Image 1 (tube, rainbow, N blue to C red):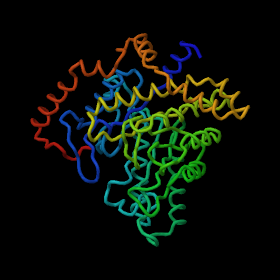
Image 2: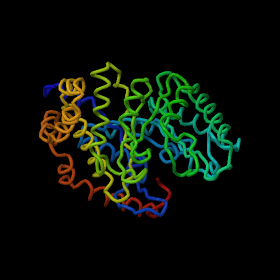
Image 3: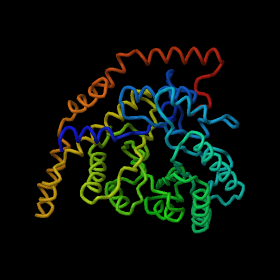
Image 4: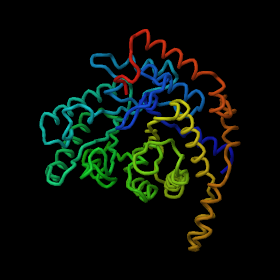
Length: 397
């Protein structure tokens, strides 16, 4: 693959950053606050625009309906705010886990009032998506149980299936439903959508515009994620990713910080599906879902974007002809060597060239730090909150 082809592929790699990744977040033990963290949707969009301005690959921002939109407020204002910051709204993410009514679940809850509240919330999310020109409804459920016998597992399956089908029917043409899965947390005995197979079945039954969303942190240790990716691509059911990294469970760490080789293998699985098997991959939504409790918010997002580009580019450098030959000859050592050789390549100079050709600084992180942007927004935001009487660590996401 020549340089122009590589650069064209980099042009096509667009990564959606999450609004909540720019705000103060924490664990169930508490929050560690950052003075420059975004407290409003306007500040989140400003930060997302900053990341895109320095990286050139993050034009979309995921929004969270409960945290980013107030009741009765025209959502088109958010769309305009995004455009002013050089980005656009990406996926719309409902919140079916934070309100007290969801104590026993949302779509899968035995409480009919909770299921009705979930219905109303999803309809509002779809309406917001229309207003902001989003074509993705991204669903994750905390639904499940913590104790054996707490609820009927088959009844919960039927409730979830019926809800997803209703919501799929309420979506406009051109919108895709992404169904995420997670093996545990906050439900620890069973989770209603616990793995990719359940997500696949639920998406299939929901309707033709529902797909599986793979979060790279939502698996038990040792799960072969690229195998899942290849399988779903061949079935036409892969909708997108939530990229992050982890050491133990759903750690939501910056991409590639623990196991960059795993992300490289995922990108290679996608390339093989497209170039060797002719499967469509242009629809895949590449999204970030990370919780930057300790790292500075904007720097962490720039770091993730840069890691994604590096690992993606390494995957494009695998010699597929040599790999095919080694596989046909059943030469395991050479086949693995094709992957290891590409992964060992230092692609940073290539990425610097790509950035300079597109009017970007060759090293986004160094350029951002040299800009003085962090000190400026920290001073502005602290002063703004003090003037408004807002206490740090308040209710914002």
